[in-house]
Structures are given as C-alpha cells and as structure tokens.
Image 1 (cartoon, rainbow, N blue to C red):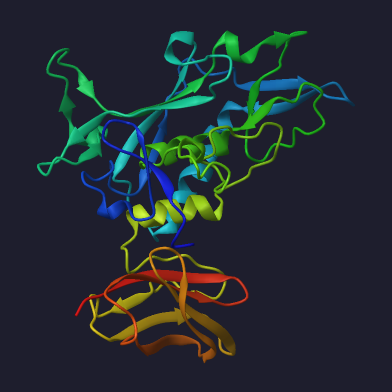
Image 2: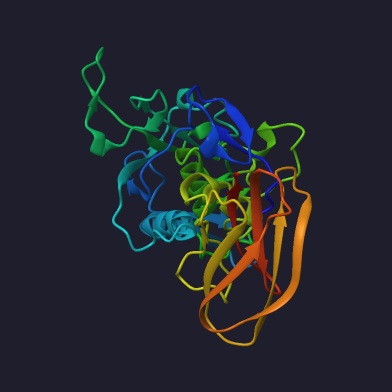
Amino acid sequence: CDPATKYPYRNCDGKPVCTNNPLLLTPKVPSVDVPICLEHIPKDGPPNEVSMLAEVGGASKIFDMDEVNNDIECAQSQWDCICGKQNEDCKCHIEMRWSKSAQDFDDAKKVLATAKMARGKYPDGSCCLICPEDNQIDPVTHKPVASYVLVNNTKEFTMIQNGLPRNAFVNKDIDFRAAQYNHTYNLCDVLAHEIGHLYGLDHYQACNPYNGSSSGIMDDKINADLPKQGLSNDDKCAFARLYCNSVDVKESDSLFSQIQVKAFPTPTNNNLNIEFTIDRNAVYLIFQVFNETGKLVYDNGYFYANQGLNRITEDFSFLTNGTYYFKIYSEQYVCSGRFVIAR
C-alpha cells in the first residue's frame, strides 16, 4: 500500500472524507465488527432462470437464482481474507433484498444496488453500522432498525426487449459473452461493492483531486459485460487501513504466511524491530521507509530471508520525530506497516 495514497471513507453523516489514515479521524468513520455476512431474501427477485438471446444457439442462460448464495460467498469472502477473518464466525448478518420499486433507488435505470446504512453512535461520538444482532428499535416507528443491501429488479432497470432482458445480473461462473444484449453485471462484483460501503468505504471518484488515481470494485461505476473482476489492490489497502491493526497490516502474496507483520516498539526513539514470516527459503527482499508525504527516506537494498520467522532491526536515529511507513518487497508486494518515532 502506498503510504501517500488517500482513500475515501464515509463519515458519520454519510459524506466522503479522504485520508491515508482513517484510524486517526475524529470522529472516526463508521465501523462494524468483521466479518459481515449477507443473508439472501429471494422475495421480489428475478425468476429462477434468466436467459439472453445468444449469437449462436438461441437463448443462453445468464442467471440462476439458485446460484445467488455462491455469488454472496464470492463477494464477502474477498473482504474477509484481507485481515485474516475468513475463518471467523459472522459478526453482522445483513439482509440482501431485491426491490421492484423504482422509488427505492436514486435512478432505477442505472443503480444496480444500494447499501441502506443504518447507523448508531458509540459513547465517544463516533458511529457504527447497525446490524440485526444489535436489536435496535426505532423510537418513532417502534420497528427494528438494521442495515441491508437492496438489489435492483425494477422494470425500469431490466428493460425487456424482444421478450428478453437488456439489463440483467450474471452469476459469477456463467459465461455470458456470446449474448447479443450484453449489458450484464456480475452479481459477485455488485455485492462486493455494496459490502465495501457497509464497511465504511466510499467511491474512489468522490475525492478530487484523487479521481482516477485509485481503482477497483469501489469505483462509482462497475463495468458491464465483463467476467468477475474481484478486489483490486486499492480496495484491499483501503479496507486494511481501517480494519487491520495499523502496525499489523497484512497484505500477502504467495510468500507471506498467515502470521502478521509486527513492528515494535512503537513509538520508538531510535531502534525498530520488524518481524515477519515467509513460506520458503532463498527469498531476497527489499526494505524501504517513507515519511507521511510519501517520500522515500530509507532503503536498505536487498537482504536474504529464510523460511519461517524473520527479524530485522534498524537504527533510525537519523530520522526526526513523526509517523513513518515501511514496505517489504519481493518480486511482488509483500507487506507494509507503520511506526512512530518519538523522543
């Protein structure tokens, strides 16, 4: 993760705020216990199977209602894995609902889905996502309050032509590229986008002048007519900065094991220890340090690391007080973290 890159998060008022350290915001951006799980409510959804007119061979199935739970698992598991939460029990069970009402969307012709985000307050004034487990009751309506995801199944969106839908959703594993009326959207990507909002991420385009500098599932428009895209590195970094410990941030390639990177002591006056684990021997890595503006202030060149636990100790007596970010590289990105110098 580039320490200078700022990502947009949703503050307590639902407005985007750009930062490269959301943990330092006051008040904090909305948060929720990880992981979130979607519970599919099929009412008002598409028919069990949706087909499109293919170039060869007549109608081609592009959507199967029975496959929706696989799309949900595809979407939520990507976020769970970033901070190593993939084996933990769900902390927040959010309903995934379908809607046939255009009034539920800002623009029923274009909006694929929307995250309806009910928020509560912590004693410190920061806010949190309300989950069904919180058992919150609206003081006016006296009805239960919780966040949910609403997916567009309105006639304004599907635009039936020649008896077939021009706009539709595609299950993650169905090959739809031979269809004539493409305009299809991978449901796994759509749900991953809305889950990102539930976790407190905003659209990358919301923060100028950063428009175009970040990309991924949290772009304000998901591309049509493409196979599953999945999370980009920007998506992962934006999430990690909010939900992974600021020192123990974990981003992994094939080298990096399940043990998180640890930097200590922090704050430090001079010497810093960094521990990390890799999965095989004969790996040459690069260790670099950046200041808060993203300027490279230290590069120790290549060093050799063995399989298992490794520790490097660096003397930063030449650096001034402040917050710094480090990266450890192999041929690909390995991991990163943050430390503070205070004397």
